[in-house]
Amino acid sequence: MSDAPEPAPPRSAADSRRAGGRAPGGPKVVLIGPMGVGKSTVGALLAERLGTGYRDTDADIVAAEGREISDIFIEDGEPRFRELERAAVRAAVAEHTGVLALGGGAILDPGTRGLLSGLPVVYLSMDVEEAVRRVGLNTARPLLAVNPRRQWRELMEARRHLYTEAARVVVATDGRTPEEVAQAVLDALEWKDA
Image (cartoon, rainbow, N blue to C red; front, side, top):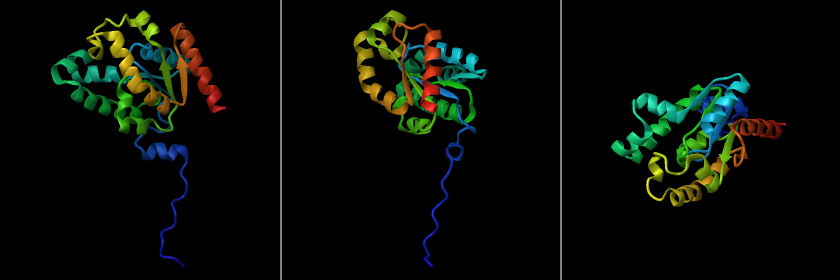
């Protein structure tokens, strides 16, 4: 007989999620992707189709801070905003069982990527031409204040691989209506889970 401890029994995915501080089952869908891709619009449509709640971590931050994200960036700086974002994502993953949309930069945090592991994460993608068409790249987005087209490309070069690695599926939004994107998300998740 050995004095070595017995290996722990294998845990189910649900046990792993609970152990990680997630709500039982976790979010039904987590949307990630760049600013302006339509996570909020598509997320609300998905929640309606799935008969569940919708939550947006950017909206959580705005509600908790009582000011817009652009104001947080200007007044407190990006590092402070990222702290608030990490806390908002942690709380949402732990509490929410519906559709969850994360801010465009949330995926930069390794802890956030760890929280998303094993969840039905969908990366909503778009190219720069679609970004220009949708948001004009001249809106009040703090990370796109100077030369927005170039900055958007640079942000995507830095983030695309993180979005792709964290996602179970990638759904291109280029040239699609929000309704078409929502349906594509549902189709992709059903196929991947089959």
